Length: 388
Figure (cartoon, rainbow, N blue to C red):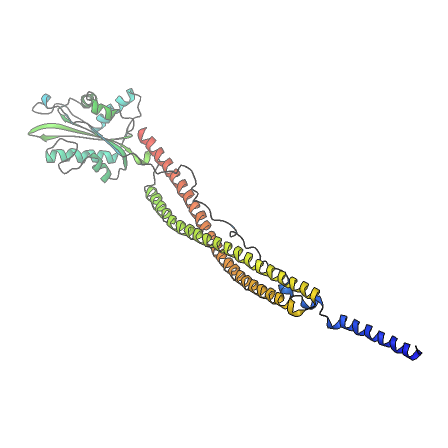
């Protein structure tokens, strides 16, 4: 073969090699040219939402002590009387003896001294009440502890400013030889004796007067016994009503607490529903993206083995459509996550309001409990003094 022919053949061979290399390098689509957009290349997983808001509402109202203090009642003020001592069978036409206030008080205290009971102190107020009583009995011609107008010794002493916690009265009508005989007549009567020897009494007032009663001249004697409230610890009369008022105010908090708790519970139920919905949507979106990725990868394989874009494009198109559908669902997930955040924020606000109200109520209950304990202690001290 001529030399120029050999050179021509070599050049032609080199040309074919070059064309093959160019075809392989430039005309055949690369795998990378059909790789899906990076945003579709992997499933998009939304951030898992919280299953419950931060913090949780207090489950129930916490009362300070297990056993709530209940205000007790002070014992009622005591009035002691006995059937008036009438000594009419021994009456003569005129009184033969003389009765005195001082003598009556002296012999009464002697009887208390014999019984080792504290002596009584004379009270001007009780003296005045006894004088008013004896004058009224002569004026209205009655011999009873309560006047026809319904006024008793308790009314008289209280009217004159004696704040009694115990008051008693002895009455006597007759002709007595002296003060000692009068006191002895009372001591011989169980009810009158009980008044004279009552250890609760601290004060005494006496009035003796002679005059005409039921057409005869007689002596009327009145003993007024008393124990002033000043002798005992004071009880705040407004404390009980204040405690009742506070308890009423606290009871009004319960409906507010119930409303808040019901609201928290209702929103919590809605919250759980949104969380479940997000989880379901996220799973659907991930499934669609995963299937889309699988389709695109299959198209790449078809193109790589066959070199046909036409055969691979159906897989690529299906894959992108699936990814687009998945992305739409992910957009729904984002919206529901935003809704969840707003709802959780609202729940958190309600929880804070609820717990603040719980704290306020608990402090108030503790204050009422302490107030009640102090009140009860004062009542117990008062009652103990009344009994002493």
